[in-house]
Amino acid sequence: MSRGKKYTASIAGIDREHLYSAAEAVDLVKASAKAKFDETIELAIRLGVDPRKADQIVRGTLSLPAGTGRNARVAVFAAGEKAAEARAAGADVVGADDLVARVSGEGFLEFDIAIATPDLMGQVGTLGRVLGPRGLMPNPKTGTVTDDVERAVLEFKGGRVEYRTDKVGNIHIRVGKASFDKAQLLENIHAVMDEIHRAKPASAKGKYVRGVTLSSTMGPGVHIDPLLARRADEELATAASA
Image (cartoon, rainbow, N blue to C red; front, side, top):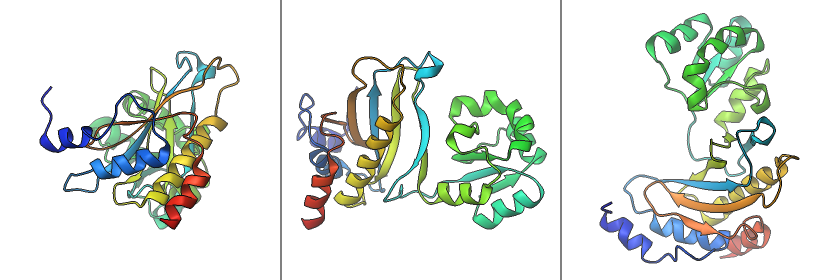
């Protein structure tokens, strides 16, 4: 596959066989983010789990200390007082049966997070085939099925993100923007890795974190040593004093 000049120049300075520290990876990825827009920085984690088994699916939510650098579009399935709370909290789209109809009939999917009150899940559940494959189906385990819609909207607007293993056991999660400084990105990487280790299924056997890669939207991936990925405290102190 043909690569652009910027990508080729960026990859020339990266050893694809080497396992870098998180701090080194951040430096390399920031340097390779040469697009005219503010590229998203993403962390990809390969886990030693079998997502075909329900008890080995790794999923949840966490709040990134430095935020995501992105204004998440939040849709809330709620009615009455809860709908008013969602609007006041800054939800982008709010509705009940009317919103369900927009999604099912019109294919409306202009949102990044879907939140629902428990009483609406009977209707929202009919959207499983539409929302499920896109990772948008509200779920109590991720805090997106709740009566406290105000808190949920504020958290997801403020940098709370969802994560879930894909069909081959990988997790992809954005940890900021290329415009973030080094300390901010390291803070977020540290938080993600702590959360992934906390969420380790009891039934997972053998090596749990098998690979960690950091990349920007248009840049090459940089492999991080899984044994170094969580050692961010010293790196944060170094970055802050640099």
